[in-house]
Length: 281
Image (cartoon, rainbow, N blue to C red):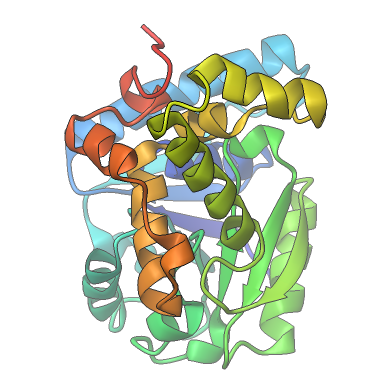
C-alpha cells in the first residue's frame, strides 16, 4: 500500500507534533479541528517546533512543514487520506461520538490509527466499517524527539495493517513496539501508577515537588521526575487516563489522587497552559 496523504484529526499538542513529523518527511497532511482559532494556534506552534528542531536538533529536512499541511474544520476532508491519525482528547464519549461520524467518511482503503495512551482500540474500531484496518499508535510528547512508539494491535487488526504501519513509521525515522490491546497497554499501565503515587506522596507531605523529582533523576537516572512528566503530558490527560484505567480494570490502585483532581479543576494542566506542579510563564 502506497501512502501519500495523511490526515491528522485533532490539532492540540499531540496533533501538532504528529502533523509536523510527517510533514517534515514530505507527506501531504490534512490537519482537522473544530475551530479556525485552534488551527491558527496549531500553525504557529508547528512553526516554532520546526524552528527549534532545525536550530537545536540539526534537522536536515529541506521541507517547509507548513507548506505540506492543509488545515480545515471540515471532517469530511479526511475522505481523501490514505492513513488517518486521530488525536482527540482521552475522553471515551468524545472519541465514540467522533468515530460514529467517521464511519461514513473513512475511505475503504485507508488505515486508521488511534493515538491514545489508554482507550481500547477494539472498542473504537467497532464503530467503523473496517475494524481490521484500525490499530493504535501511542506517540510520546514531543513527537519529533521521541522516535519509539507503542503500536497497539486490536482484536480485529490484521498483520498487514501492523506491517504497513511499521513501514510508515520507519519512513519518518520512527520505530514501533507492537503490544496487545489492554487498557493502558504497557507504558501508561505502569507510568500512571508511578505518577499517581508521586502525587499521593506530595499530597501526604512526604516531600516537596522538586525533591520527589530529584530522587527519580539522581537516584534512578531518569531524565525527568514523575511530576515533571505529569506536567509535560498534561494533568488533565493524566486524570482522564487514570479514570479509563480505573473503569477498565475495576482496580482501586488506579484511583486518581484527590490532589490531581483538585489541580485539574483549578485549571492547572501543566506546560500546555503555563502551570502545573511547576510554573512555566
